[in-house]
Image (cartoon, rainbow, N blue to C red; front, side, top):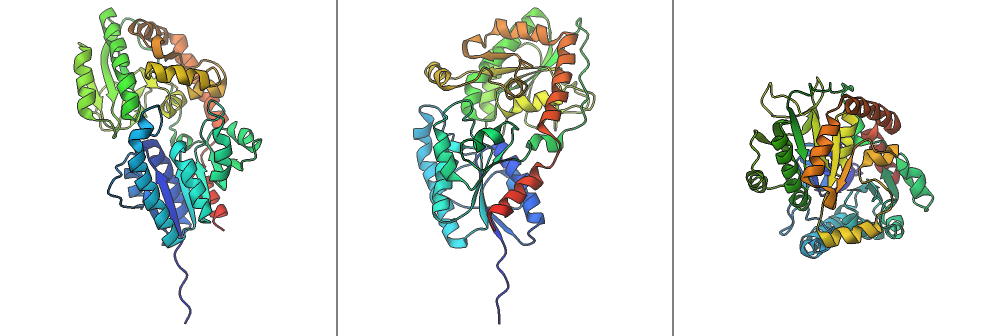
Length: 395
């Protein structure tokens, strides 16, 4: 008597909150086409809700320690090696349909090469930004995946010119975009609520948040601030954020928001779980990264901030190619979000940007940029396209 076919299996690795949410959407779409399909690997709460069976390891915690920077890679090595060993052992045992590796290229590129050596088809999702810095990774990238799923339109032709099978699958943020409701410029006589989004990784927050809070203190001193909302990502210790807020000594109310930052129906930025009736933020200061693009897509005036250690910045500034740190600025090839990087991230400069972004023309410009970005990134379909790529490589 013949045995029933074994259910399809997919291995997934997403080591940070943004990758977790992205992978979860793709897993939901993939499982819809694979009733009974098994999904195993490493991820966070979004992937768990999508049906991920988390692999166990005695060393690893989630989110993964970051393998970026100068000293962080050494601290991260034991946990990441434990993860890789567990992941590869599971691949040998279950012979999965495919593996989906999301972002974190310093970990996932070598892992992808090892998986392919085991004849496991690999989809790498979210390309390393080698068009901006460290182009030497392209050779490793070519060997680490069967298909590279890219989320920025220009990346497809860039990576294809290097012999990498890149496919543009759209941007995950576009799938859940609310209709654009531009924020009305506030009355310049009235103070406004300011949102601070310092990033999702503790090392980024450690460098950026104190500078943003110092800037907010300067704005308060000049009389322009009603209140402040500070976004805290799950991986960031709440006590560290509370300590930074205390040190800043801001006199107006400062709310630490654990919910997801969302465009308010009337315009501006609100937080899921915040008390009803709380005024949305009319301006955002956001760490360079995916969140800055999300704010741009929502049409909310924002400043992009970045700071790291002096030595690390000196090294990075010699390696990074291109003029802009913010993704919206790169995509539109002009400054739609002012950028304050490293030493420029000072209280006086932040206060100056605050006043600039309060003007009516700043609100009109933010809405216009959001319209351009939405057209450039295309419509929804990211999850379905990424799930189709997983099926394609797994045939």
